[in-house]
Image (cartoon, rainbow, N blue to C red; front, top):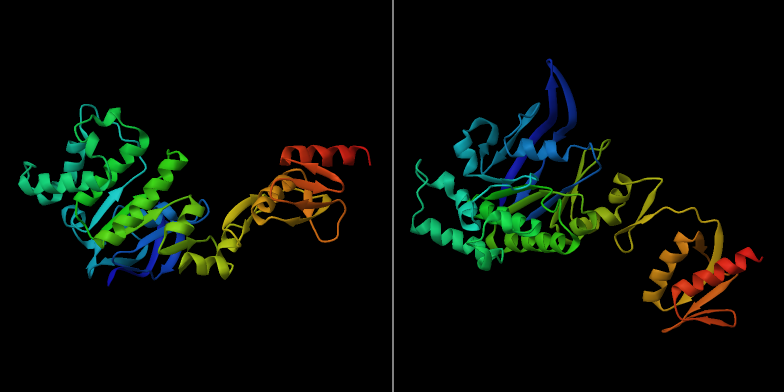
Length: 327
């Protein structure tokens, strides 16, 4: 079911009555239960689009509609019943427990005193359990790791019980294990609860794996929308992130540094070892081509070059360097 639509939405800023357009004529559609990843180069308008969709910023023209409601024409309280927002700001609240922070998400549903009733307690406990923080419920927020703090804010957003949750760079400040955990958690929650999750992220490889749909913002061609794999196969992803310094590999979805390859080798053998060997060779300035000399054969437990056998890539690189210097 469609939950959000934009109609000829133009986003940007107005300064001294002069409009600076960042993206124009956006006609986007989001369905319930989807995880949408918003990606694109710096300056393409990711944060501006999120802020506009969340009602924090006025569009230059057009509109954004959630469940038939124009998000720009309702009060903050009405908006808080439709959208939960998680920003990148670090959480630094003294003497607040995990439970009390998560309970703040129920504010749009409580009376003006903000009293915590039985229903709120149940919702809070359920959300804390959902993000695997049940053993930290009574801990102070200041005692948690950055990854745990981010999970607290995700729990708070889910307790707000809105059909759409918008997160701006939810994995910022986190190490790799926590980035993976947060992305998997958001994907799981979207699919299990039927809520729509929209995030902006610089984690391109994770977005390709976790997103049901990608909004790929570009400076020249607006927003490309599609399943991540389609955007890779049709070349849109490569176009958006084209650079002289790195290259996107559509075979495995990884970015590689664009080294100057002024030497050649030929390579054959075990596929897993070949992938890592190619990376090391590229760093040393070698391109792998057919029928080049020297020829390297990768076995299950060694690398063969001529009559010589090497049990590590380090020793292989050393031998190549030695042969170049003595050529």
